[in-house]
Image 1 (spheres, one colour):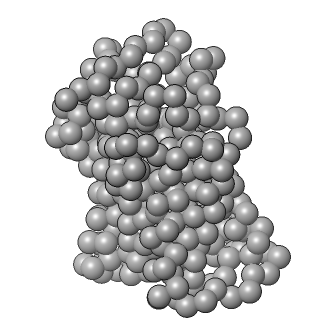
Image 2 (cartoon, helix red, strand yellow):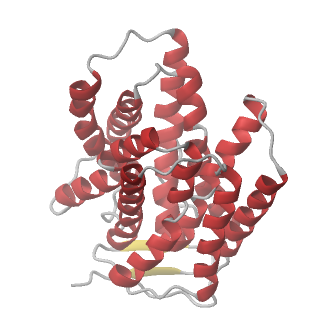
Length: 318
């Protein structure tokens, strides 16, 4: 998995495409879960996604946290995995998929608000416009007129989306320890999250069933591609592109999920859904436009931010 080094030769477009691989694979999770994994076992899917992938990355990197990174890894692991996975599954069980996806698409707007509070980065008007457009586009694409609104489900999804947005912002805030690879820091977070989810899985769902060959293929895909590779690419994108830009790439998730349904399950799109697809794509592209000047962000840990034009080392703040 050759993604831990710097991407000196990877320009902005290449970095955007590489980062988009993460939400694209997450967009296939629903299809893989329903077609290849044991039925009605959401916490099993979450546990298998997190813990084996985390342990694999830690073993590959051969690094453990030191100093403040013990508690930082715990916080990030809970935000991005340990709390996020169970909440989003619980919310999804109470809501139609379209409603859940639409709520999840507000993430760029939440990231914008948290970036102002935590990173002291002002969000441009076009970015806010793109965020609103993303919600409208995803809503048109995945909502149906028969969608039922469960207040508890909406609350759970909003909480999950807010926690994930906080994880994105804090990942940008703290960066990673100097000299430590993304494989290691990603592995720490996934391991923490998985260790929280596993006992929850046993308490709620009981012992998992004996897996079939099809189950094992589905689990392998989720662990290696949908989690280990995807999260390394995702955190690298946050580090190099910034929290705001990366958050808009999350719109790829419902887009891929819809396209997967078209290709694999033979579903069709209505004209209104086609309009939603176009709006969502336009919002995502608008959110990726590079700002005229880079905002300076206070980062607590020394982080080396590299691109093809410059290399800037941000000194330790506070």
